[in-house]
Amino acid sequence: EIVLTQSPATLSLSPGERATLSCRASRSVSSYLAWYQQKPGQAPRLLIYDASNRATGIPARFSGSGSGTDFTLTISGLEPEDFAVYYCQQRSSWPPTFGQGTKLEIK
Amino acid sequence: EVQLVESGGGLVQPGGSLRLSCAASGFPFSSYIMNWVRQAPGKGLQWVSYINSGSTTIHYADSVKGRFTISRDNAKNSLYLQMNSLRDEDTAVYYCARGGYCGGDCYSDWGQGTLVTVSS
Figure 1 (tube, each protein chain N blue to C red):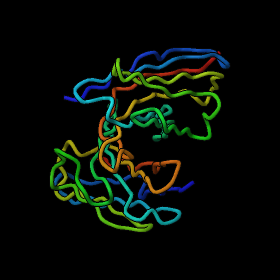
Figure 2: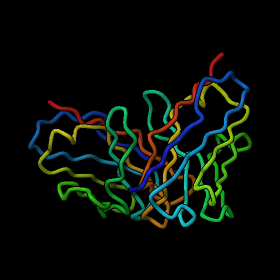
Figure 3: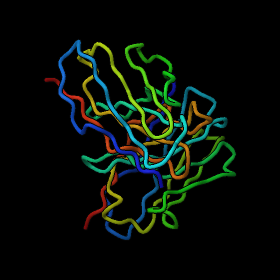
Figure 4: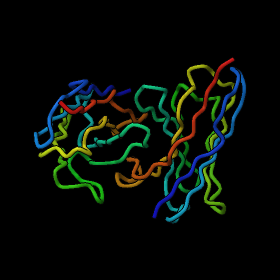
């Protein structure tokens, strides 16, 4: 199965700053990568699908890029509600797999 | 508004069984792929099972294959997960997730989850 490795494990930033989260796949997933946000006690929420497409209702400050094995989720101008755990997920091959998550915390 | 409401979780002894349900509303349930995804306490997300709209294509994670059975009743707008031979490592919050975008292979909507605890 494809292993997704996210870095860093924890990212400490202040509101207003730019966050850059990374997801690396053990082999190419083409552009079949999604990003989810999860807040404590809540279900995950789909942010980005197919590497760079925002899901409905997702603010423009969230953007995704990459293809093959290296992907980035960028949050430009962090809002207080953005501090959460972020997961990447690939759908290139079965089984679908998730990264271990990056915790974005307030500095 | 899309709503997914899971039920059926609880405490069960190792080797026991549970049946999870997910009641769907706010969208044409019979047209959508559905999945179960779980999250062990303090851990990340793990996909568990997939079922297409007509129940003709079903997939399982290796860790649950042969023990779990996914099914759906489109007339009742409901998704199910029959879990047998439960193990300690099956302890998790179980989410039902609608396959939206990505040809159904991304999880566009999630329920609030139901906690399954396997312990003696």
